[in-house]
Length: 203
Image 1 (cartoon, helix red, strand yellow):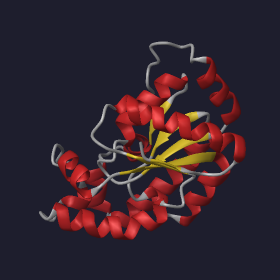
Image 2 (image 1 turned 45 degrees about the horizontal axis):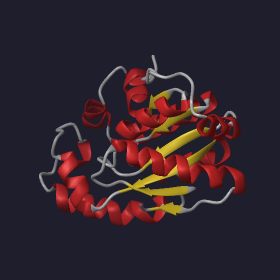
Image 3 (image 1 turned 90 degrees about the vertical axis):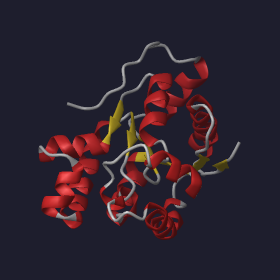
Image 4 (image 1 turned 60 degrees about the horizontal axis):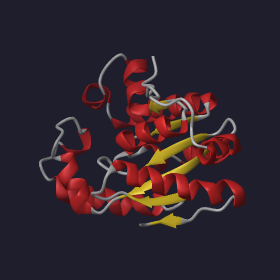
């Protein structure tokens, strides 16, 4: 069963309804580092637009019948990444939706190509200090098990940020109300859907 957000108000505003209409069958795909807020922001965005929210990590756990930390521990990262790519490919057939992806998902060239075809990608870009503060609240991050989260996050940011920058839209994830980030995404998606070009929203 998908992790679907329940919409409190099923009637989007006229502007949001127009956005969804232009979206068609495509998905809004949130990419970015662990702690960037993809799930929490994604749920609010889906509720605002009146479309489903799906968390790819939750779907991977359902498909594998085990948690992501357990998949990493028992099967390894390569096994996890292969399954992640298969699950995201399946989910991209189910739009329109807001799809939150794991931090490494967009690094897969095949996944990026599918997202370009079947979705609009939004990078929630966050600074190291913001990510550190957020990831410390959870203990289920397999890539941070080495006991040096700042070093690990810095390394991953160096590897991933140039690839995340290929996303259609970049929105700065910062310590403000999640609804402010949702507003940035919605505002950025309108010209993106009209003109087919990405832009960066930082305020």
